[in-house]
Image (cartoon, rainbow, N blue to C red):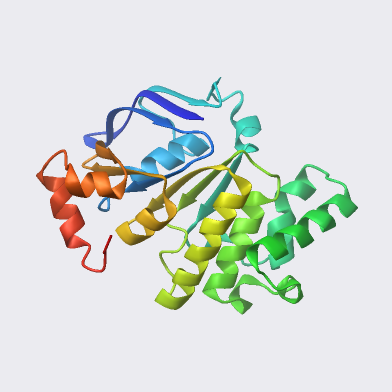
Length: 243
């Protein structure tokens, strides 16, 4: 569903991503994990078209990503960042409907979709007229997810979506996300620093370090068949993790 061929990203003398070949499977949840600065978010931002690769090409569902088609391809993508990335001057409802209104979608169709997504994400409809500052962290994240899902994209890209939440809220949302991923059968690419979260949500884990892919596979494969010492070091550093 997503394919990177010889993709790299450099800023002057800083290498954010080494030359990388990567394929993301259709209909699966793939998790990018690794220490800060390892290139995870760089990959996601290049897929969304927020930054351009220094070398290489990116394909989305067999379409070559370019300046000419990036706006059309973005409509196939749902993008969620930490804390929802909501516009503070818009209500929850207006944040969710922003792109649909821009595309002049039918009002009754939008309302039906809004009700459907409130049920899917367990978001109370009576909170739709609230502004982001009036919502809890978990509620803001649900609004961000509804906005990403509103146009029914083929692909969901989530950059540390639960990183800022307290443990109980995070655990609850992890359960909800897992169910949503299973129900919708979208292609999901998720970034997290949390190995337990990666193991719980992901069909496959891609471990990165210093701008390159170190190993990919299930968490069991990473534990039992580490490709290098760093894999074991990273797993051992996740003190709260248990298989």
